[in-house]
Image (cartoon, rainbow, N blue to C red; front, side, top):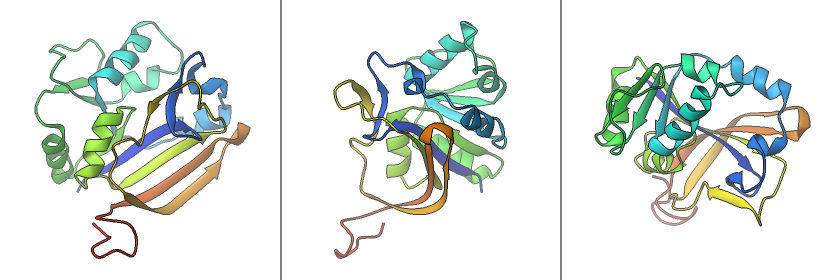
Length: 191
């Protein structure tokens, strides 16, 4: 069976971006970028908003996007139309949960998300996520933070399976998630 990893970068307070701050909160790390380049082959999953942002960066020749252009990508959207301009991208207009469930069942596809907060929320709620990985950047953006990542999520238990500290204090945390039916200790707490 194929596997699915949710993959986020966040500020310590759980934001995916912040108004006025540069990408990655201005904390680029050569060690982190090297680690990204070493990641095994996988298909990237994303929603329309992330697609528009990232394909625009690729079209503009922005540094670091070449590797993403090379990888296979699947975009879930009811607002985009074929043909998509970004190379190696397939559009799925139907239900994302059903499509990912079928992709996992075929067993040939290792998948990772790219941004796409709503898509990730749907996939974890449906119990389709095998790993949940986050790289936490050492900054709090309470006044300027945008794109709160975990709002609307179900309760999820996380078992740590990997951690690493990159140059600049970036923290990688990788978990096996379990969607919970209620708080720990309550009847039927584990989903």
